[in-house]
Image 1 (cartoon, rainbow, N blue to C red):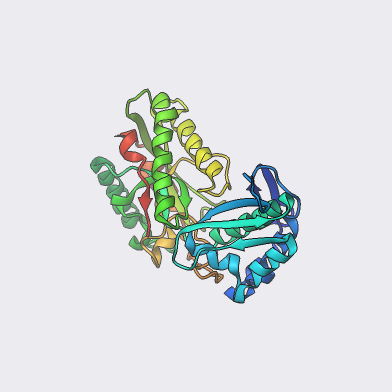
Image 2: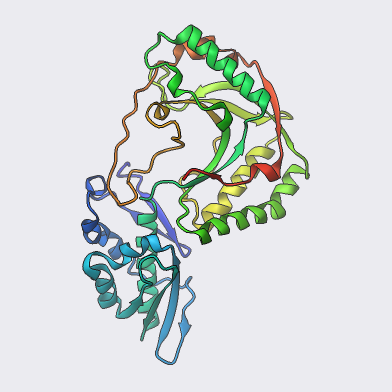
Length: 345
């Protein structure tokens, strides 16, 4: 992460800057309090975007969160919750471990309740980002004819380029899993999974049918490219995907779906647009055939991880492949079937 381009966290209509202080040295759960202290300090300013109810005892606000994240609000020996309560002059009630429910914040002053809510939201977002991805949204591109074309491409590459550094059968995508990824998700409860399914149906009613005209979109996979800037050291090789009629409808559709999920908080905002591509070779597959997208930097218990990758030399593949020269293959997909969360549990 560049110092001059810190990560931005959007909460309740406001934007907070996350400075990369000691993030890469994070090792143990008991360090949660120190790790989050910087976020506590940047969340002091009250925000009016939260729903705060006035009661006879003062003010009350609730926060929905999966039970898996409760421990990060409680902290070691309850220290994080105590610190929040003392500094915001509130009382914070958290459901017991394993029980789904709402975190309830009460206090005498509205500003204190809002401040506690903002801090809790920052904590939840921070530790949600540390969870391994559980699902991703994708169009499946695994029509039989497409699989056959892909297997022919794989056979050609292994025949002509197997002597090139890092090229072997283990880094090819499973043809049955060819897809176009829209975004990666961390869904930590059945409620969040249900929310995702409902949001997909809303997208279909509100704009997918309008963009597609209620008909399957006719697209084509043609040409291959690589993700980084050195064709001699490639980690991801992908097939380009675009509308056959030359329109921008597919790009518009996936961008609007991405925007909707980013606005809901189910997908963290990292990009403003979806890069339309279908991964055909990925060096992460060497050790994990189920690897997909980028890896989270942390395990489920909050420990930093590092994934080594052995890059491959893709220069001859780019030069020799029929895909590179534009030998195209058409395929169709149906909107309703494609917009189903593809689980990676």
